[in-house]
Structures are given as C-alpha cells and as structure tokens.
Image (cartoon, rainbow, N blue to C red; front, side):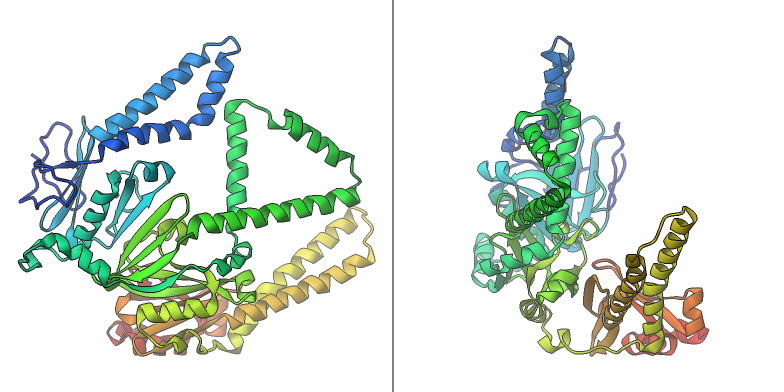
Length: 533
C-alpha cells in the first residue's frame, strides 16, 4: 500500500491509505464517514457549466446536422459526455480534515490523494458565480503555496454549500484542534470572531471614475472579441452577413474617410468606456476589506460572481502600491498584497491578492499603512536616488533605439525612392523628445530605502510600482550586471522571497550602495557578497 505524502499519489491498483484520526466534520457536513463529499447540488451545476463552455461547438454541430448531415448526433453525444463527465467528477471527489492535515481525493479508477498540513494553509478563497449563488453553492480554493497553479495538484473543492464552505474556512484558519482549549460550545467561536471584525475600507461609488484609466476595459474588450470570433468559427456562422451587421458595415463603407475615422474612434472610445465601467463594477462591486478577530484579512467583492478571500496576516510580508500612468495622472493607485499562498501570475484580480481596487492614492496609502501597522509617511517619503549614471542609462535606452529606428526607416524610404516631406524632419526630434521625457519619468520612478525592518523598492514608468515588505521575508539576494552596467558601476539588486512575485528588484543601483543596503537590511546574508567584492 502506497503512502500519502505532502502531495501524494495513490497507485490505481492500491487501496487508498486511511488518514489518521479524523477530526469531527465541520458544521453543516454531518457525515459519519471519514471522507466528506461535495454538495449534491453540484450535480446540477457542473454538467450545465461544461455544456455552456462547449456551446459554440454544440451549436455548430447541431446547425450542420439540421442541414442534412449526421453532426447532430455528434452534438448530442458530445453533450451527453459533458453531463457524464460532470457526474463522474462529483463521485470521484472527496475531502477530509484531520487534527493536523487536510486531504483531497480525486478519481474513481485511478484515485489520487493530495494532502497538506493544516499549518501550511495560507489562504482560503470562496468564489460563487450566478448559478452557484442561485443554488447556495461556493467553490473553495485552499492556498498552500505549493502546486496551487497546476491543475490536478491544487486544493480546490467545486462545490460545497455556502454553510459548509464558510465552516471549512473557519476550521482551516483556526488553530489546530490540539491547541484549542476545551470550551463549552465550540460552534460559537466563528460568531464571536465575526463580532470582532474591524472594517478597513469599503468601495465608494465615486471610485468608478478610475475604471476607464486602467487596462481592464481593453483586456475585457479583447477577450470579448476573441470569444465572439471563436464562437463564430466554431458555430460556422458569418456574423458579418447578418442583416443589421451587414447594413451597418455598408453604411460605414459609404462614408468618406475623413468621417469614418473619427466615427470609428468615437465608437471604440465609448465601447472601451462602457466595458471598463461594467468590468470594474462586476469585479469590485460591494468590495470590502476587514480585519477579522482570528488574525486574518477578509476581502469580499463581486457583482454577478462573488469572491471572498481570506489572507492570514502571519503570512503577509508587505504590500505593493501599483500606479499605471493614467491612474497616476489622476492621483489614483491600487494596493496589492505581498503574501504567500496567493496566485499573482494571472493578474492580481484573478489571483485574489487585491487589497484595494483602483482608488485615490491617499486611500491606498492609508489602507497599506493600517494593514502593515506602519506610519503612512512610509508610502509617501522620498527614496534614495540611484545617481547620474542610472539617469544617463535611462536616457540612452529611451532615445537611442528611437533614433536608430527613425534613421533606418528614412534610409529605406530614400533607397526605395520615396519622397520625404517636411513632416519627416519634425517627427525625428519629436519622437526623440518623447523618449527623453519617458526616460526622466523612469528615473524618477527608481529608488530604494530601508526604514527599520521595512524595505521600500520603486521602479517603472508606464506602470510604477512601490513595493514595501519586511526584511524578515527576504530569503536571499541576487546581484546581476550586464556588460553596460559593469562599465558604469551599476547593478540590478533583487530581493527574493516566498511571497508575492517572489522577486523584487531595484534597477541600476551603484555597486557600493547595493552592498551597503544588503548589509544593513540582512547582515546574516551579506557575508558572501562582501567577501566576493
């Protein structure tokens, strides 16, 4: 019989190993069995969800079948398979929480058991889209900081009843059962914690003015266009041939170019504005950040699909203040958690690490200050500049490529015999000037500072990020030099940590300043660098 490790796999022919000493099941999951199942109502959700995802293919197959082919049978068979797969997945998924571990078992023919210590649970994320909310269900994602991104190796339960999901979250984020003293009524603990909640911030409707100033609208519009194109291809339908669409294209085609371009630009701009506002509302409606009585932060948000994320403050290493250029002009910013156990690669909104949506910068500073328990001046104070060598490097990298490209294009046009107008002479210095201004802004975004036990790093121009994290979360340093940096005595200083993006860098720092910074922040990690220097 094979043993179950931290992330173990059972052989298909072996009998599943029984976990030790199961704890009492969470409230709402009154089951005498050691293994607990998902909610039976999930049987009505997962097959329908799979069918909706496959709707373009099914529509195309059925549409072709109605025209005399046999594809309608393929479509019906495909739909039946989706329903069967959803039912099979439900029967093959079980979970169990013991005094010190959590187990999730998947599969019927080849069962696989994942396990992790309860002390390693770093976050619990509850998500519910419209259909889940109608049936009182929620999807539970348990962050352990390891293999959370890989399908089949993450602790995801899809889906539990809302009561069971809330009870499971309270159980996993509480102290291990062995450490909890005997109480007359254990079921009152979650209610007491709710009473002690302290609200840090909640969404204000006036913040929706920041929605058009982010790239969210452009991303959502691109996703919608891609989905529409894919649906059109899979269903075998030509949307451009439909009556209203066809007549609209013809009307635009009859317009002069001087009129069609402004009209198209206005339509695109209004579309981006509308999609941005709707996307902001869908993601962050009813946004609320509270500090619970169990030493954790609770973030709730969402309009159609709700999301509730719990972050253990003991695993919070810092915050990041993100300012895209458009937001920075409007004095806005976002606040993102630097913590272990939350995904950041797919974006902060998707990974659940958002502590504040696009909002006024003053609010972002206040929220970050209250979360970390540091003075708000830490997020506004000036940083140590990187010197004239770093400034010249920014200027050269911003202007030289533009000049080379312009000269190359102009030379190619002359070789081809294309006459260059006087606009060409204006475009070259204009582009170079824009590059120089960008270089100055990028240099102003560079900086670092050590304040007590907190490291502050700043970088970026189009998206400026100021990262504030504790020195106790740093597990290593990396110094990297290119050939051009060596000529100027500069280095890229990178702090590695198990939280957030796992690497936070300060660009073009003078070598002596970088070594002094490492020695001041983490003296125990500075010896190898000082010896090699």
